[in-house]
Length: 267
Image: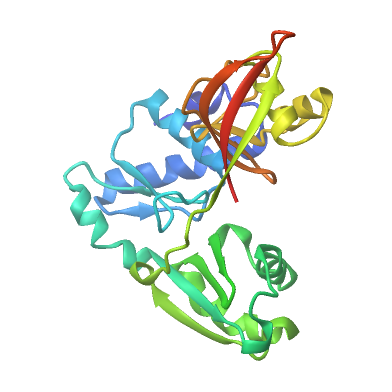
């Protein structure tokens, strides 16, 4: 396997590093016949890796983040002889939950930023942590298995968590979070992606284009950097830092010919 040849079309150094690590794991799987998995990847990295797998025609892999709609996932690579059910039996070996239970007086006071900020403040590696599921009484922090004990030991050193109960739980015990959506309408001049990003992110068209170029926009899980991309019904648009939106209906036009779009916004 010629790494340089496979990576020659990728200009960004961080993309090359990510894919180079993937190639190392593919080689390990093929030569030793064992399952390998990565740390948690961002939505951009997942899109990059998926396109790369399609390009090199590598199929025995799976993305897993602990639950169906997770944003951050690990990549599991496995020998072709393995069946998916064999992977599912091992999920609990690779991914754990660090559960934070806040004292009663802090219920409802902490948000996602409080948990992620604490991890960053401790100098711990972000890629070891997947999604952070926040509840009024605490949070479930999804991590790779070898990081769970470290996180459990380090979090109580932060003042914000010094009186919290922190435990390691199996991934199948992840608490379900109620999905809440809000029905909204937007009006756009056309179905171009930049029009949607501008309205959904409540910003100007020029700023919307910057957001797209910064690789912060995903359609159905795929990173999109083309502002003129046409949006379709049922497309799921994710704007990092702004939220997730589902295109539900084109419900008419205004007198000036602009399109009225009905959208479900995850809240």
